[in-house]
Length: 501
Image (cartoon, rainbow, N blue to C red; front, side, top):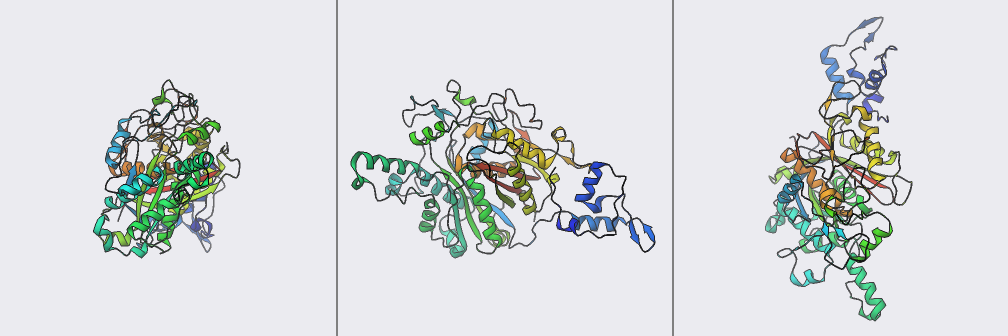
């Protein structure tokens, strides 16, 4: 098992002597938390004496990982906004997830009858009224429409809608809303115009509405937000990359508030056809609502989804100063690369396990504190088990991952390791996936309920921890991680927890 030694452990006083008779689990515990091993004695001169309880407690406090305490650098979540197959209200969205409702159905936006996959989690009856003016609403790619509406709803949720936004320093408000595919409809239409009617018929909005940074730019232009502004495009890991970068902007003092997340709208002929060509999609056309089945032996590809998920991330100092309601705390994150293959993950999960470890280090928490994992698990044959392999490397041997009673490394700490995946209900939303998953994680923190992983019929035997299979479960989240991985070997993990003053 890979271990990260904390700085305190690496510089532990030499007078803490290690017993040669320790069992293997105890040795591991001692290496990670040297001050917690009660068998150790302090050697003072030629005498030996047992450390006092106060000394043990003090050493333990310095040995373990530490969370950020500076209110200028602590990052909290003060608002959430989304556009999803279940609508644009975060409460209704999570209610649907708790009910185990599937948003997957036959595609009716275009004629998909000739495609081997004919279904998706397609958004219907979307309205941007009140958020985008009529002229722009007609021109914009859905990717931009979803991102702008999601961003504005997040600001409203944070108490920063309308005139309230004028009360903060807009030069210290940034936007980081990414996309894996960008304005794919506008791009596809532009290519079609070029082929059929020549370059003169290409719209002047072809380039601006196609590029991935425009959702961030248009939010800033309309609202006058002059802080850090850019986009990240790392396929299906995009949103988490954005959260990680946005959190770091706040920690570095570059911004007080960051509007961060992802947006995607790729359910069009070329988008569907492209993923079919990659052999990435399920072709279970006879039962589309059960097509996405993470960790099930019958899984055979993911289901496309679309939408946007955006968070308002804010320094604790700034949030308290303006009296904002705090929903959760962002503790940290990490990004890594598999350096392996364009589309396939490493089977050993090394890139992912390293990313998880680095995210916990950045967050200042130990693996034993994590009791909820929101997995990437997209229902692909290789990807689901590669992620499980990575999770086991970080948290426990597979036999130890059990609900309510896992004892890790003989430290006698109870850990409920639960993991579930919402893509079985809302489809795989690509660059927006991490944003919508982060909202689900934060709702789990605030409600005390985990939504189920639906379509669990014949689970893989190696997935031997609580998957919240088919029925929601009550659970008090201590620390949660949310995983997102993308084509190119991009790995990203972000860490959330309940806010404690």
